[in-house]
Length: 337
Image (cartoon, rainbow, N blue to C red; front, side, top):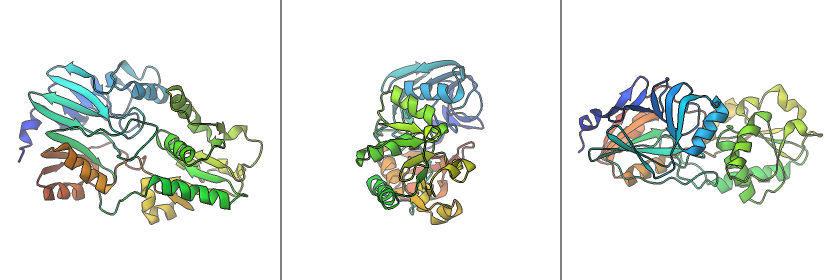
């Protein structure tokens, strides 16, 4: 069985994040550093203030929208599969299937292969490249839904549930809370795939990111800002940030049916706490069976778990005859999924 000490000489966790000494760079650091490799554009992974940033072109575009054009001293884009030598390490980016532009980071050093997955999912998502299993000696995984109870529903059944409620409630607005980067655009395309071709109405905070997706070639169909509506939008589907579900902003809508699209909607107590009438179990993270399958597919003997339900997954890794280690990385937001 692999001894983690052989990796600790060139890649290891620090207070700033996972550090690759072989290339003198950090992966998704939580504090400003001289050189960072970023897995994707969510704010708990992509932060402003780094000297140099390497990421996919889509992630860089997302960072510039969210953090500003000058969010780093220098921004370098790298497509999937290309190899860049940084110091004594060879670095390549591979699809993670989490959101548009999300990447796993493969670092090769002296015959060893470390794959840092960032956040990932295994379900089909028309808004991003599908997850690509990458063979590794060391695999660094998340565990947001790292408990056996988390088994996400099929996306199509959740979308069908939403549309059934919409058809049965012609006098009410269907108001769904979604995170603005990834979940919003994915739910829109799930609705399109289900045959919904009417305009989908957007809270103002969601418009800019949807515009970027369209600019980057992701056709979301007809969208409209709620601010331009001349009615209460009865019978229409409206998307908004989760924080706006109970905000005064929603009072303009017709007796809204409040929904929330998240893997956490599997937990009924969370839905009740938020006052969610229509919980939709739609997640941008792997569920328990997908985490276990992914770990097996990498063939890695050493697995590090960065954040989430670490203990249960580390225990499972041991049952699989592999060495597991919980890193307890700080600065990760498992709610914003």
